[in-house]
Image 1 (cartoon, rainbow, N blue to C red):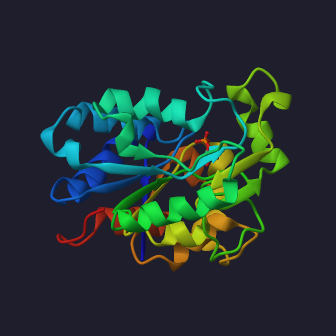
Image 2: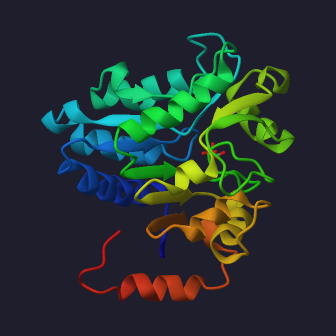
Length: 260
Ligand code: PGA
């Protein structure tokens, strides 16, 4: 069951996402959050920091990242470990040990993938997973052609993804070719998915993800198989929906008991 909410901009989306995430986590004895990277989750992280940084319950929080580049040196500013440290871990007042990423070091990668899956399972599973979407329809780094049942593994990045992410590096050549990412099956195990899409360049991908056929060719379409998905889309990203008017109507007229 997906709820699709069209909002004016990413700031409003960030507030709604933060509210839904915090409501879900705050009463859990052992809350587990799934983190995303890229520019999409920034407004959500800012809103979470404004609302909850330093709160006592955060001491019990565990978080798992979706993915990491393979082969970047430790401490590389664009490794997702560093991005999350700067953008989420420190501003929230967490300690680094509370947040796990799939390890992108070259040694023991296949064991690392299995261990990451085991660590997620041992935590009791992810309560709420934040997701962005790539222009090619990836979630995490599950590029087109990814098995809908896939688990954490090493993948080769699509050229389009490397080009999209080249803005974070000084040249395209510096963007890693490989990554380690939670699989689509791993993502589906999370209890609530919050999928965010902002900007006109995401309009085709997000429309295909929620309205198109479920297909390995558009990996984000796998969210249609999940029982609890919230999709937050800004106006420019909402232009390609076939049922945009319906989503607006449904959100404006939702039942009292419905919430994100
Ligand atoms: P972006 O990337 O947030 O930087 O647009 C999203 C993604 O590739 O998943």
